[in-house]
Length: 311
Image 1 (cartoon, one colour):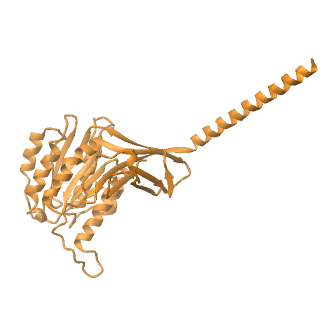
Image 2: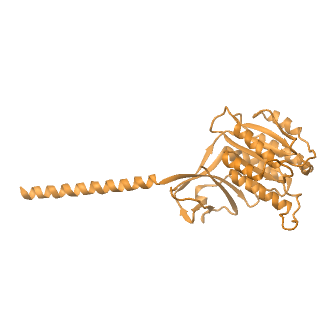
Image 3: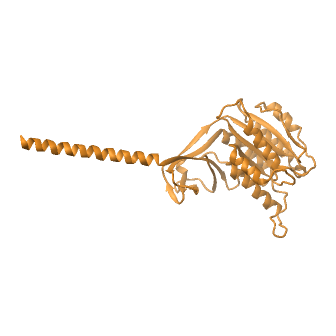
């Protein structure tokens, strides 16, 4: 009887030990899970010529964060209705480009769905920033407005125009939270007289969830710099890149005005079906240095990746 009791006691002790061990492992895993946060990145991809790329798979991508290889991540597509401003430079620098720009703008708005909302902006100087009276998906109405755009003299208030565009899109009420809000700007990127500073614009972009996409027509800007200053072309490109980076958008710089159509045909589908990368990281990991490259097994080549970490 004593021998049987000892065996039962021993077996019972083993069972208790196993239960405690399993509980400890579960607690450790729960604690580890709680100490991780969910990361979500917007992802846009272009080829080396700046054309938007939409046909990409998870297997094509390689993700590194702070020099750590991340293998457990997903590539997802989220579909949403669109709310955006199409803001077009109508200053003298656009006199040879305006017709091509209007045609490309029509290609953009013609991809609207009935749920989408578009507002048009024509801008020159401080006193010549004109905006349509409502957001609409009516392509006939929008096309007629575009046909009325014309080149006019004045010192370009580019920063003020973008600032106002972002405010209009961000401030639109009475629609669902799922709407994707953004601004498309078509300009040579040269600001000549704005009241708002670059810093104020970037601060607004960091506050509002409005992306900026910029078609930079830099062909006619001076390449040569003066003294220690940036050349007009380099200065414009630097400004454009700073704006899109702050907002999580993309900039393209068509070499010819007709190449605008490549971007025009893909920006609306890319925004409507936006791609995201999702992964988990420890909560205490700060100042993320995120790099995305093509995997060794991918048959894609020469792609450029743009990511923006969502808060």
